Length: 197
Image: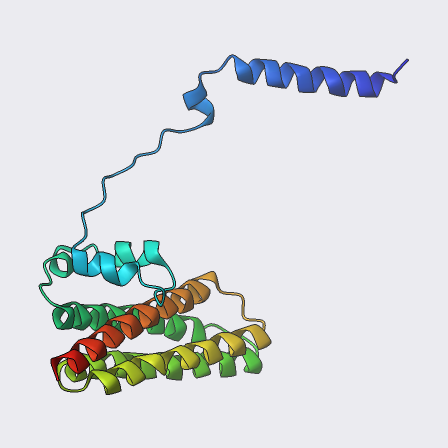
């Protein structure tokens, strides 16, 4: 026969399961409040479905503003993506600057400073690309592409310094998504520009 402790454990488990099964399902699984997404434009759909874009879901969500949906041509969409990328880089830079103020190891401070420089570069690049889209899509494509290695280096420095900051990791991840969207839109503009000649 089983020891009394095991019988008691089995009885507690059985009663727990039995008592939970009598509760309405909504008490265990809360109902999700799902809002309907704003329909995207064909330009946005085409961009977000391309292979170069790293996260389709992020792309569709980031580009679901009325201003972006109203974009009539690729250049207009590209300009808006660059503005969003720059805004995201500025917000992430603010988080880095906030974290730098907190005490930490010299190695962590060096990593954070490396990331601050990477984000300053990203902001300047996104802003510069906005002006290059019409005149020189090939240069714009390059200028967006080189943001990626800067952010990758920032991540490497954070990992090596053992900096644990989920907000920074999320900011870096989002920046990579904006870079992939920017790269794709500038590649598209480059192709459109070549087809005109």
